[in-house]
Image (tube, rainbow, N blue to C red; front, side, top):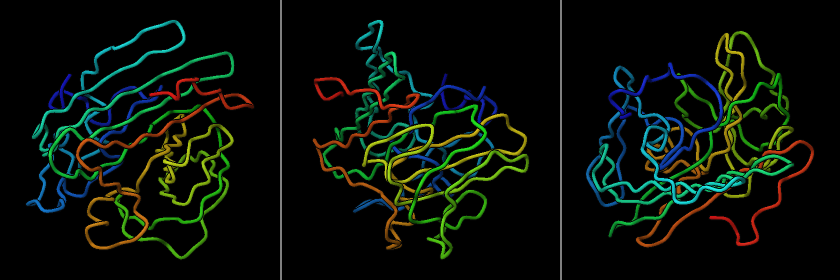
Length: 250
């Protein structure tokens, strides 16, 4: 399945999919890149903003498949979907008696610095989640604009009317999950009428590329030098964090 045939926002909501090389939205599917012209991204048909990167509809190759873990790899060619940089992303998915751990890394395979972000988009049947964050971002139509002055709520309840909240300064813990320090932003998403609640640990805020280009602080956007990488992981468990692999994960 490709970006042209992906069913936009109509796919079944469940499980968890990877957000790479960015999370959430890029306003008007374009942003100014370091030392480059404006980047024009391929988006879903009929949607004005690029959404959640290319990893969600990309073909990942299976590098390892065992009863308790799997390693998936995605190699992105320079210029594909309008993204000017080549990169490689690797997922490690582990399961044990306590729960599951998802790990991901993204490496810049091009000759120029690459702005990037990553994260996870799990769906939960939970009715609420409690988490501590330092900053709530003001947004319009799910595009972040600037940090808000009000204190972010700690308790987020599934509501019939729906909402989306962009939070920064997250301490990495929630009542239904845990993520490491690389994912200091989190999105709490409850669509109107939906029977689920999303808690999305991510590395940057919605439209982070454009906000960072305007000098807005705290967006969380990373710039990966050629040959370098960033990584993050998410652990989900009932009452305890699943232990990481002894080899350090991906």
